[in-house]
Image (tube, rainbow, N blue to C red; front, side, top):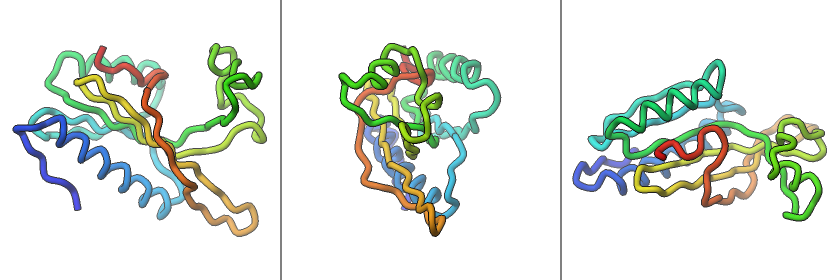
Length: 163
C-alpha cells in the first residue's frame, strides 16, 4: 500500500515513497519482463510528477536539473534498466570505465550484465541507488531478479540534480 505523505516531514515521506516505488518497480519488472525509464519528482507538498525519459538523455537531464533547482522539489526517483560491470577496482575494464574511456554499454556481452536501477536523490543531499541484477534463463526465457544491493552515491548524467 502506498504510504501517506506527511507534509510536516517531507524528507522522510519522500524516503518512504522511494522505497515503495523500489518494491513496485521490482513487481512491475517481474510481471512485464522489462521496465520503461521514468523519473518521479516529489514536491514538498507530496504532489508528484511522472516523467518518461525519451529522446536525447543529456538534454533531458539538463531540463530535469533546471526543474528541480528552482522549485520546492524534495526528491527524485529514477527507475531504469541499465548495464552493469562487476570487477575489482584494479581490473583493467573497471579502470577504463572509471576513467570514462569506455561505457558499460560498450563492453562485450560477456563483460556486462543487466540490472534494474532505482536511484534516489533528495534536496537534503542524500543519494543512493538500489541495484537489482536481472537474471534471464536462456533455456526457458524466464526472468527473475537476483540479490540486490545498494550504492550510496549517484553519478552519471542524472547525478547531482540538486547542486
